[in-house]
Image 1 (cartoon, rainbow, N blue to C red):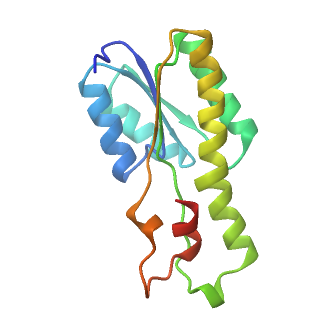
Image 2: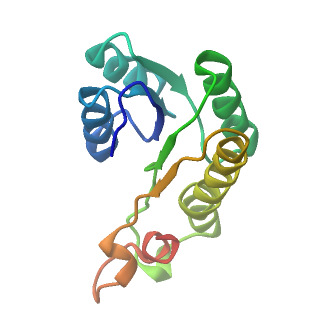
Length: 156
């Protein structure tokens, strides 16, 4: 996959898998939008990766924040070639202890956020030269007896 000078958004870019994906894309020559709800973390990874990386504070649980991220990317770079929907949250609680608020928040980010990121990205990609949408899943989605992340597993 040739990605030199292409534009990629990575959600959940501040740490872990998202930071590693951002590093790999930047190393391959992509211009990377490091998007995360942790603005300081997004700034840190973008600073580490250098001039072709831009930090954005984004809450993928809110459509307005997603649209702002996509609009800012288009304004700055004029294109969007790849989006990696990596952001995710969990609450460690047994089913009996999981609250409605916990359930809603996990699904707002992990399911709804992914959908609206890919929908908005797809609209912009269709207007351009196409692109790639990559959704990061989890083996937790398979469900494992005795685990305490039922809402997370259902959202993945």
